[in-house]
Image 1: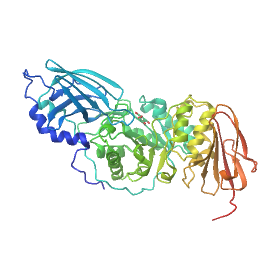
Image 2 (image 1 turned 180 degrees about the horizontal axis):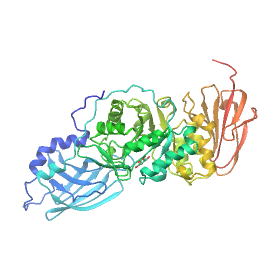
Image 3 (image 1 turned 135 degrees about the vertical axis):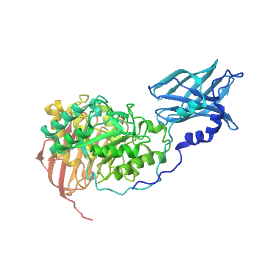
Image 4 (image 1 turned 30 degrees about the vertical axis):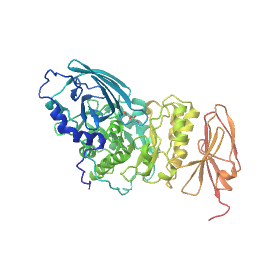
Length: 521
Ligand code: GLA
């Protein structure tokens, strides 16, 4: 059951606009008459543009509390303008698009006859444009649809994602240039390469599949995806599952149509197509859902909509690890949640995420997983040792394993890294504990992960740029009596008494130790 929706618009900006609406409409002239005293107040109309951020109109008014206003755009709805200062025919204000990494940006306005010259910045776009006075009818036509959010609720676990989801995603290798043919070929190769049988089951279409909405409001794929249902059938016939991507915002990160205002309808459409996995990416929603509570409700809204379809759909939250998402991801129906911004195919970026931005292990376990982002193994930007570190980190962290490469053209070295069943078994261990760093010694790091059968996975990482010896200390592992030691990458048993390894630059060793604890609790 979905919760009844609150009937209020979201956010301070929206509330302010609502309060201002009658005044603004009164201020907007029926036509655009010559004004005896030029003024900045009123409704200002931007020339139509499909380009980010799709500026529509600006509303400014002077009230008892000074100047207030909003800038309305296709990406962000009504953004409040802040700290407005007006002097004669000139004004400045700040615009904050809700991204915590960017400070609010300064905009300047100057009256030029009957128009206003607007200069400012938003996200990474510079705006320099002339706008015209609008009418009440313009304001009504360009008004952004109000967001409604459900009342807070906690969704019960649904039993999915008992172990971290595994599969392939289009984004890291193909970006938005993804199509039906490529997805089918990837499905074929997941089977023929053995990757499916090694556990990689999801074929996830990331951003770039969306077209426009039909007259009934239903989202339609773009021309590169002629028939989503047929594609899902094809993928299912191979023993695989299909994943798709959307955003709680009006626009996705690559500028495609998001689910804003159509959340339940989109969930139903995805279920009808036969979708098994949804990645829901905040993107432009950060300008609309401006508090942690609103972002959480926006994710809850889709979580409830997916549940209401009755289809078991894995729900992947992507809001870059903000607002301690691991502490509430499960409550909104999430099975995995990103802990970080985007990975890149280089050692520095991968290591920064894998070693330090992988989420709190206490949040992870069967049903809900920290997601340090998709794999870059095989994309060419790292050495084999660096990719081995990448896989070892993701496995010991019980991270979702989403292949990010073109599996149609893999080298034997890439296949060996991705298909090693001993390593995958560490990631997929049913106990579902996320491994932790137990010791750091300059460039050396020792991580451990307890496993369901009482054994322990131990990873030794060398973050330095030359090979070095790394020793395992008795205190590192709660198994003083080691009966067996398996080198997981080599796939061979090693001497149970071995405690020292030479680890290559940026490389890793992964072993599985079993034995007896000296004292049992
Ligand atoms: C964001 C996400 C990426 C990818 C792109 C698609 O950047 O973090 O993983 O989905 O959007 O536009």
